[in-house]
Length: 209
Image (cartoon, rainbow, N blue to C red; front, side, top):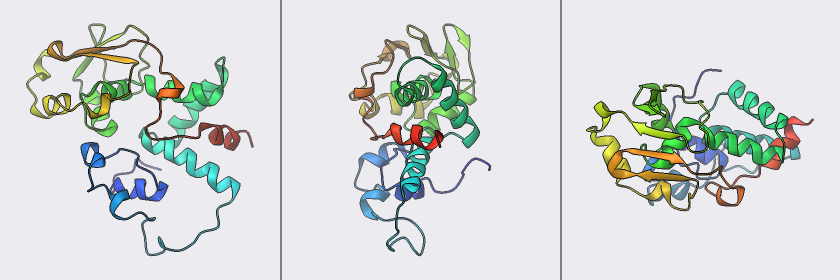
């Protein structure tokens, strides 16, 4: 299935959770989840019996949509998390947060992960002095992510940087606003990954069937 190109607010309503796909709009009372807190479509108001499998599937969809991944990309990341030492669910979230588009979003260069992904694909960033345009590039601790010189005058990026909402409660990244660069200070800590709230163990259960 191709990448979803429809109204992203429908995805938040479908998951009945803010996935922060619309940038700063999600922090206001214009958020679709706040205004219409029910599933989209003509049967959105209906009562649906949810099975254990359905609950697990919805959690997987919620995480996948939050990080703007296709099914194959998500499954590949999960399999990599399984091979790592530690708790598989936590490993999965750490890998997703280490993606270059996620780090760019957390640093505040983009108002949403979708926008951050586009900025990366268009070649606006370099990692440790080298241009990287692959959103799934895994950032390592102490790697320096820098906005390229020719991109520093883009108004959209500067407006995003001036808004601190995306950096609140995020201690694993550090931004040097005047230098248009930032770094991954430490690996993300599960206790701090609370926006949105995930139940990653349900995804582990789903793939273990």
